[in-house]
Structures are given as structure tokens and as C-alpha cells.
Amino acid sequence: MPRFPGGEAALMKYIQENLKYPQGQENVEGKVLLEFVVKKNGKVGSVKVLSVLGKDFDQEVIRVVKSLPKFKPGRQNGKAVDVWYTLHVPYKQK
View 1 (cartoon, rainbow, N blue to C red):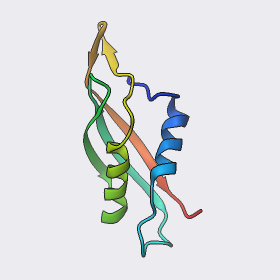
View 2: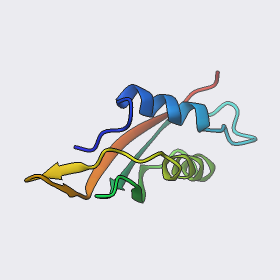
View 3: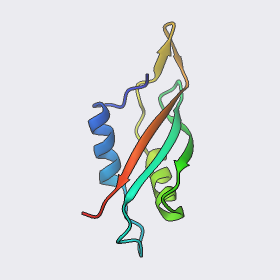
View 4: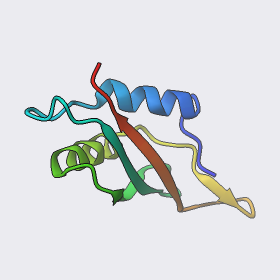
């Protein structure tokens, strides 16, 4: 499996620090479920939203995921490979 620098906790911290709450949606809370490809070079590739919270929320999560730093790529038989990665991103008022 691919690994984010610093692990899963660092991945969620990066997302929470860079995620912006859409204007006019202050009372909306929930999760966006998405999957994305971690390419064999460690960069994030295709991003798909699997459970929709709302267009503005989904677009914001996609923006942040596409900005992620490189992962340590997944490996199979000693070679780097593309791997799909599934992630829940919570939206909660602070």
C-alpha cells in the first residue's frame, strides 16, 4: 500500500489544515467518501467522489486531495505500482 509521509495521522492533519468550509454551508456536517490513485511515482492521479455531501464540499475535497504531497508508492513484486486509495473526509464545524 502507498504511504503518506508521516502516516495516516499526517495525511488527515494535512487535509484538515487545507480544507476550507464552503461559504453559505455553515450548518452542514458530514463525510465525503472518495478514492484516488496513488501513481507509481507517488503523485495523486484520478480522484472519484463515492458519496456526495454537496457539490461545493466535493469540489473542495478534490482540490485538497489533488494538492497532496507525494506518497511513498505502493509496491508489488518489488516494483512500484498504481494503487487506488479510499478515504473518508469529515466536515464538521469548528
